[in-house]
Image (cartoon, rainbow, N blue to C red; front, side, top):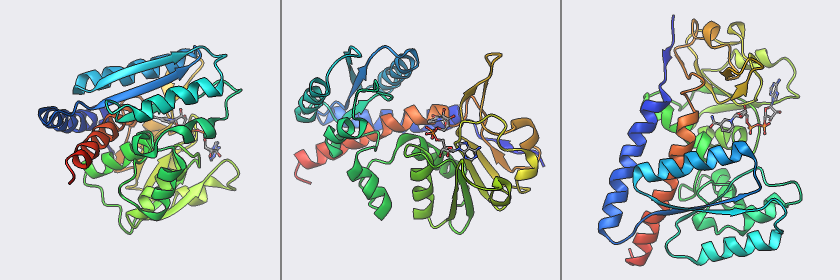
Length: 289
Ligand code: NAD
């Protein structure tokens, strides 16, 4: 068996087209969806990520603003900026680019974002909503992107054995919760898991987000499994790879995502999606619907 490669760019194009149409409809009703991005310091990777987010907004017709601060800015100044954005009716989504410089209390900064505008889905209210299955919250963009990819390929989740490798707050944990909500049987593995392979071999759907190249080898994967590789790793030779031995595992899996060109394009796309969703709720509330 050779796996079908899930083309993240194609799925992202499809979702962005839906977002573009929704944005045009909102504009006709006088609402122009807007995203505000707050960036602190001069981390080069963060600057690239922010530039990509702005580009994705432009492509879909969203308004975007960047609020850039020096690394030595105080918590208070950042929080004051967030409060202004919370109160600004032209802003429907607020994103604080992570990581923040080490002197910041990240949870406090993220907690200052109004949960109604938290399009990254990191506010504790939105995290709690994910736990109880409230479908009005904003799901975090990377796992939301994975879920969209599975839907796009008509891959059933209900009753499937899902193994998530990686238990971070931004990928692994929300991914597990989202798929559990879809009635999958979910197992979460992490760096302290003993004998990872005994779990991964049971997976009908294996989602890997550990940040370790070649963590998942063919002998750890069941024949016919769906393998979603969230990892992004830069090798010493400059090559970008995921966490999965792509060439080996694709001989056993039924579906597999490549790196690059898999989950990556979906993350930014779901940020745009969440912002359009937020603007649409704003329009409904304003119309008293
Ligand atoms: P993280 O470092 O916060 O968490 C990594 C998780 O993997 C932890 O729970 C850790 O316990 C687990 N882990 C580490 N080594 C392991 C091992 N040997 N076996 C089992 N589990 C192990 O990372 P993160 O922010 O969740 O990101 C994970 C990866 O996904 C990174 O490569 C990151 O670059 C990538 N990522 C990609 C996107 C995207 O858009 N494609 C978005 C976010 C993160």
